[in-house]
Image (cartoon, rainbow, N blue to C red; front, side, top):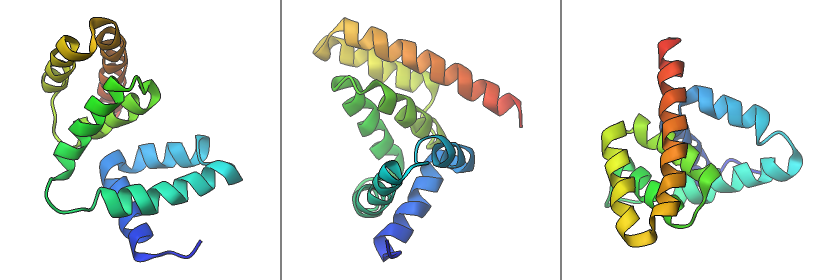
Length: 133
């Protein structure tokens, strides 16, 4: 794949959202085969390079939209990723927890229970990772 401007921009945005440790971990454990490498290239260009870079809303709000979308769609592995990104963009654990609780009135408590379990796991892991700095 040639490094288009959108691909380069997407790699920068992705690194900003995820941080170097998460990018490195995903490269080693997720995008470590030809099929997933192609997927990673595609998402860097199309999702991060074109969609996340659009004007009008900032990265912080975009991460919250993803947390909400993941929760509504029961996309649990993605929720883990987007919660980490939301924390990196400045959302607090309390704010994210309130967003999830608010969704309970609209999408149902069982889905929010699962989202809260995942959020707790992410918050605990991120706190431990931060303690290792």
